[in-house]
Amino acid sequence: MAAKRGQSGLSLVVGVDKPSGMSSHDVVNRVRRIFGERRVGHTGTLDPLASGVLCVCVGPATRLDNYMVGHDKHYRVRITFGVGTDTDDVDGTPVKFGAVPSAANEESFACEILARFIGPQKQLPPAYSAVKVGGVKACDAARRGNIIELKPRDIEVYSADLVAIVSGEGDAPVSWDVDFHVSKGTYIRALARDIGVAVGCPAHVAVLRRMSAGLLTLDDCATLEALERMGVDASLDPVKLLGFRFAFLEGDGARLVSNGNPLPETAVELCERRHASATDEMCACTAGVRQSAMEPKDGEHVAIIVDNKLVGIYAYEEKRQRYQACCIFQTGVRRGGDI
Image 1 (spheres, helix red, strand yellow):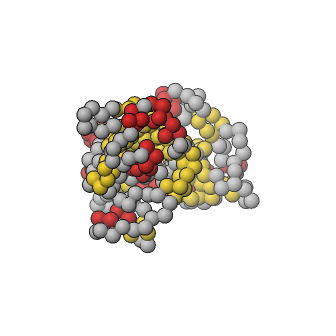
Image 2 (cartoon, rainbow, N blue to C red):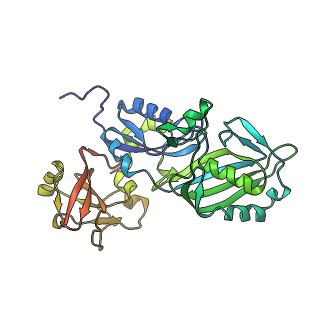
Image 3 (cartoon, rainbow, N blue to C red):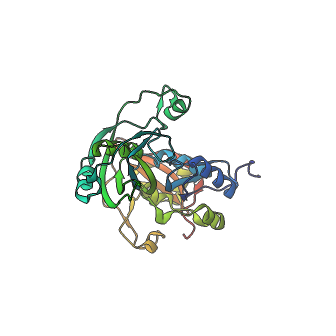
């Protein structure tokens, strides 16, 4: 039977090094054209200004998005002082100006300020953000001139490391280059805004690059130009990106999964990754994978692999001593171009 229009028969995950100046939706449209597949989605929006790690799912693999969001992230950001904008980044309209304290050029001062922002905290999202209130995105309302009152949200900054101070000469602004490791839901633009308040002057994000999202790093990502050349060979292992324990099934077990049936605990031998070289990580038959010694935990998600494709995600039910299907992929998700 021929594939439906806009369906390529592909099911895979790729990492894209998003260029600055493109929206995440622009990247999705480009990936649609590259693979000839209309079912494409990303698992974590990047602002147009930002570059870096963007996880993109193709075909039935788009159903993985519920399991690949909410990860912590690493960013490198340039915070520029002396000017605040309506969007809290360089793409916005300047709305605040202020003299930059001379101490902003001192490493000890910068490190002391950054240290104040480490740990759990409440953060007020930027007015131009995708946060919804009453079904309306704050950014859409702001563009129409209506500022929605947003509520602070719980976030955590795990680390904030000063990389460099870019001193302003003459009228040039002072900037800090900072590496942040943050929880889900953290707005780096809001951090820049609040750091400016702590320094004593307005501030905004001048440059932003996402270095990782969960287990996906820049090393795993391809530029859009490289993706054009590589095609399916750029696909990544979704089992590795999910970070779940996993099991290889065949025979009766594989048939149960194909129908979305529960799996008895005895039919699932859990495996996990050991710390290994990148080469070992690419193949399940190497020392990069070992049998797990830990018993399954109630509610734990596990990845099911058949014929070296991800075919399902199951959750363990301790009371019934079985695994219940959460998501089945009739077209298994490809596990990487080199496997």
